[in-house]
Amino acid sequence: MYGSGDLGRVARDLLARCGHEFAGFVNDFEREEGVLGGFEEVRQRHRPGEFGVVLAVGYKDLAARWRVYQRVKAAGYSLPALVHPAAYVHSLSAIGEGSMVMARAIMDVDARIAEACVLWPGANVSHDTAVGRNCFLSPNCALCGFVSLGDHCFVGAGAVVVDHRQVPAGTRIKAGAVFA
Image 1 (cartoon, rainbow, N blue to C red):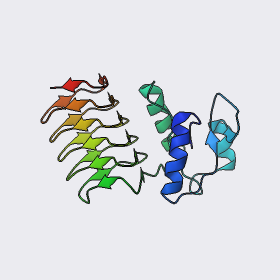
Image 2: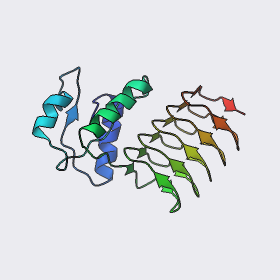
Image 3: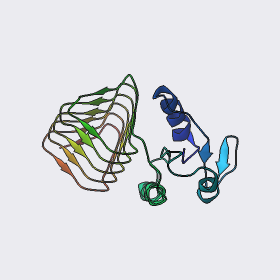
């Protein structure tokens, strides 16, 4: 698991609920309990094909998070999509590699999330909505039908994007806001 902070702790629980085994944390900056080492050090002992990687770098710097995703991919690791058993994902929806869908998040008919996204509990991606790469959807936010959310976006807790809207890449929508 690349990242050992708050998201890493939550992702570790999600990993277990999805039936995967946790091998340890990768952290390029800190050595704390459970950290196996930095990425270059860890990849020498945990080779692609034998291990996958969960991206647990937070949303404060989405550009840095995306660079980590690209680094892991370039090294040949798979990044499994993790879906909590208590999430609702319609059979006609699609989840990109390395994305996480937390408990009670909803993905309706033809909802699509790209690579490296995080849907927190209660996030609602309504029908025919597309979420770009490396996006964070906070608890209880709602993307209504036919929304297009660009890459590297952050949607705050309880925020709403009304139907048929295109949200530009890199947009940060504050908690409780309405994007109309």
